[in-house]
Amino acid sequence: MILQALKEYYDRKLDLPRLGWFDGYIDFAIVINMDGSFAGLQPCFDMKGNKRERFSCRLPYVGKQARKHTMKGDDANLLWDNATFVLGLGKNGVKKLDSFISAIREKLAGIDDPAVDAVIIFLEGGRNDRKLFGPVLNDSKHAELINKGGVSMTFRMNNDDAPFVFDRPLIKNRISEGLSESKLTGACLVTGAIGVPIEENHLVIKNLYGAKKDPNVVSFNAAAYRSYGKTRGDNAPVSSTVAFAYTTALNHLTNSNNNKLQLGDATVVFWSERETQRSKEVEEFFGSVMKDDPDQMVTAVEAMFKSVKTGAFVEDDLTIKFFVLGMTPFRPRIAIRFWIVDTIKEMSDKICSHFHDIEIVQPQEP
Image 1 (cartoon, rainbow, N blue to C red):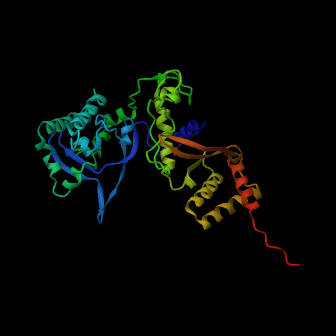
Image 2: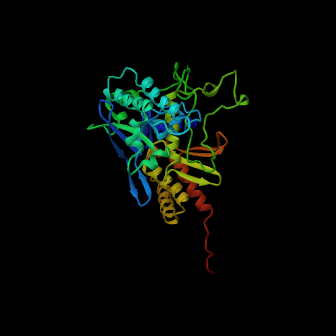
């Protein structure tokens, strides 16, 4: 099963974001004191010429708005968002700011951390008196950029060791527990767990060739795709933790320089069940195809030829699986073009057989 294989890949890739978090960017941190007063504005990027060089960080993940907002203006992220939500700018600005404040109050209710109260004091003060946002909106260097609304903003406490407010221990623990908004519970089709929260809206998959709008692997947006009157994720129940795991893993693969290639209109990702020397060689072969690097391809194929001819496969290579997934975006969903599961050894044998079959043999001189 595709979702199961992706979930297992996520479980062994400890460098991927854990539940409640995802990789994103912060452009500015508003620095405040414990009484909620403004203390400064901290840019979180470097300028190279006229271009901003942004630095990736782990951000709280709350629903699909972590990737893309709806047009309603009522789906703020937790403790970070673009400037229209944080500072209430532009169309529906007040509604967005109210949503931002509500998200903090609702999702961090009961946490004994004065930083939460300080952020709320600052935000509510600025909502009631826009002059309190003046030091940010009229910053001498960055006012124009901030007022456009597109920059990502968050908060940090003055003289605090935590990079941002959401990195403070109590808040970080709450986020890491998972903030599923699903009201559904049931049996997860991937793990078999009973009575777990079921994800209603799976995270979109990015970086697919030809996608006009980021699509989903699991999506039900019309009656023709539903059964027994069920809607959204209840049609194919997957727990919130598994949904987060497989979408995080797949987004990591589609954003990879080493585990992705383009085959016509299909975006192809590949990975092994567990890393071995042979699995690296197979991945290097696929990676060299993507990069159109003949030298790297020759090296990878030579290594596989030697393994096949000398039998230099360890026992694990006979059982460890290698996965290849081909995908094409089809409106709101992803069409699975092909799904190949094979062992490392069998995959190596087939690649070597392919090159053996197309080998050009020079005629012997009489």
